[in-house]
Length: 256
Image 1: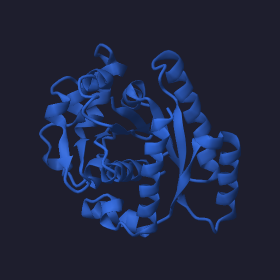
Image 2: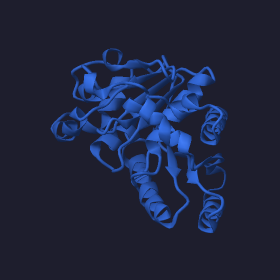
Image 3: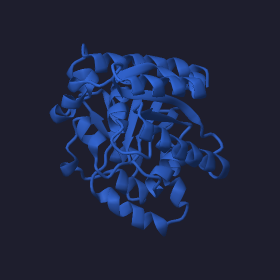
Image 4: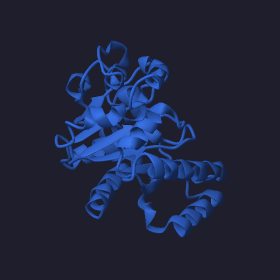
C-alpha cells in the first residue's frame, strides 16, 4: 500500500513545490515507485517535473470532477523517473464545481482507491490555502510534511496550519497527522533563523527532520530547465540536502 503525504503550508513561497518535486525525484533515485499529484492551479510542480502544462489533454481537474481515471490522467516525468498527475489553470475552476458534487472533500480519495498498490509513495503538492483542493489532499493523506522557513511569520502560520490539521483529523480523516517539519531556505549565518530552528526542535522534538535544506541558487535554477534540482545538479548543497531528506523519509515511514 502506498504511503500518501501532503506537502502543505498555508503560507506561500515557502518551498512546497520545490520540496515536493525534489522529494519525488530523491525517492525515485532510491528505487521507490512514486506518484506526484499537483493540486495547485499554478501547475509549478508539473512544469518543474519537465511536463508542459499548456499541452495537457487530461489533468487533475478532470480526475476530481470524474471525467477520467488516474491511469488516464498520469504522465511520466522522464527527468525525475516518477509519475505525475499534472495541473494547469483548469484546476482553478474545479473549486466552484466541487462545491455541488457529492463527497466533494473525498474525490481524491475515491480516485486513488484502486491505485494504492502501484506506488510506494504518493506525494500531493497543495496550494497555499485551506481550500477544497487542499482539503481533498488532507482527506486522503496519511500525514502532512510541512516545509517552512525559520522566520517569525512562518511560526505564526504554522500554528494556524496545525489547528487546521487537527480539525481535519477530528472530523474527516482519522489517519491524518503531522509527519514532520522540514527546514528550508536555511541560512545558518542569520541568528534569527538559528533561534527559530532551536525553538522548533524544542517544541516539536523528533517531528523536525534532521535534514536541513540551505538557500541554494542551483535549486532555484532547476525549474527553468524542467528538471528537479536533484537531477539538474546532484552535487549542489541543496540537492544533497533533498537526497538526504528522501533517505530520512524512507526510514521514517518504516516506523509509522
